Image (cartoon, rainbow, N blue to C red; front, side, top):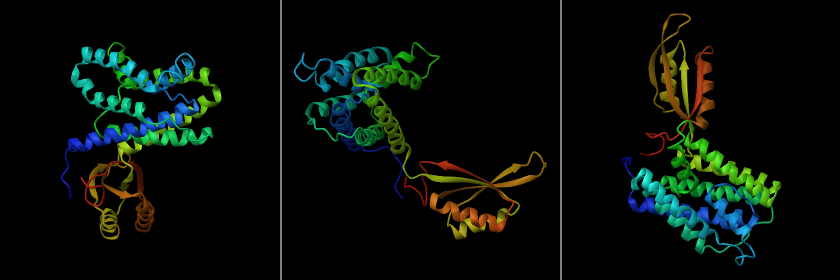
Length: 287
């Protein structure tokens, strides 16, 4: 079994570089090409490019707007919260800016749904990689953290939702309602995919079992499923009786078999099933 510990520094940098590369691809080849504004500084960059088209060639490049927006933000964040706060975001922002500058702009598809799905998938994976590498890309999350310092009654997540929502609304007026609706699909997918990568894709199930036959159920779990199980002392508040509540973690495919076996042993057993993520230990994800 591997020993748990911090990722090697070169692996963290690799995750950030690859992650921002995927994000850059989603922004340039999906969202910008289709006129979808999904929030964040990248959304503002897409808007600025559209507004300046004809005034400055094909519009101000995305990387320039991203850089212009982030430089004063980083300086302000450093002054307010210190360099330690911006250090991890600095690498991510520099890497994303470079990717936006060098990646060729090609249109993925004319189908807005495909653009929203694949763009959301690419950006979600990219954001997940960046966070796994211990970095961020600055932008609205850092802006929200600064604002929250002065608006304590709002959470960073609430402020981010307001800022990103406002950017999406502006994008709706610039590119139309239809594209904005597809952009919302992309935003939802980005959130789900990035959360899945950050929290772990190998979901398991946590199971609590209250039964009058704890010894038989425990033996079944250990022998039939080859899983560990823990007994927790509990008290039934209605009956006033002391009970032994069992707790175990199983894979999703094992859950059906577990419930069938419990019913065979004790049809009156009370079973509670919940999601378990990032399960480390023997038989699950290695540490």
